[in-house]
Amino acid sequence: TQTVSQSDAHVTVFEGDSVELRCNYSYGGSIYLSWYIQHHGHGLQFLLKYYSGNPVVQGVNGFEAEFSKSDSSFHLRKASVHWSDSAVYFCAVSAANNAGAKLTFGGGTRLTVRP
Amino acid sequence: EAAVTQSPRSKVAVTGGKVTLSCHQTNNHDYMYWYRQDTGHGLRLIHYSYVADSTEKGDIPDGYKASRPSQENFSLILELASLSQTAVYFCASSDWGTNSDYTFGSGTRLLVI
Image (cartoon, rainbow over all chains, first blue to last red; front, top):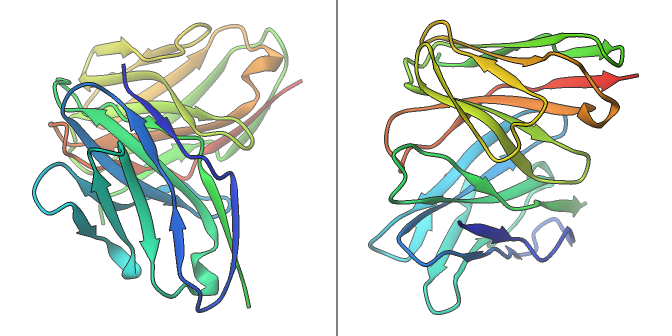
């Protein structure tokens, strides 16, 4: 079974700062990795995903994530955050040998962007 | 626009009562899922379905049943609601294939008293 760990429950930065939200996974086979964002009171929205190829993937609103097989990581980054980026961010994995697309989510990281 | 719609948005239920949460998708997706989210935690998979009239157990199915009467509709049923089932429930849909991203509903906030 696959597991996902997001080591930082809360991250606080100022508007214009860069930010990195960490995600580590555990699984022995091929996996799909993705990030979702959840604004307060809403459902999750897809940000970006990775399966193969270029380990740096671009998502919406200036977000990018980098896959590292050696570190078993898929960290999310943004060069300059805006107050509207305040939300909870979830990393998710899906085993590539699944017949379906069942996702396993990390516990989430709450990002607070201060003006 | 393709969407996942959940009803009700919130509900208060009595311990031991029956609760049905409904989900409707217009994405023409094969897969549908029910997750629960507890305060300050991630999402855990309860049940999912990849075709009408068939459901599969997720990681935490105990105390829940699911029904998929059509491709568009997927219900979560709590036959005997318990205090521990107080949570926010999210429905999602996805296309076939492990590289498909999910479309989530806005959630149903359930309080069992």
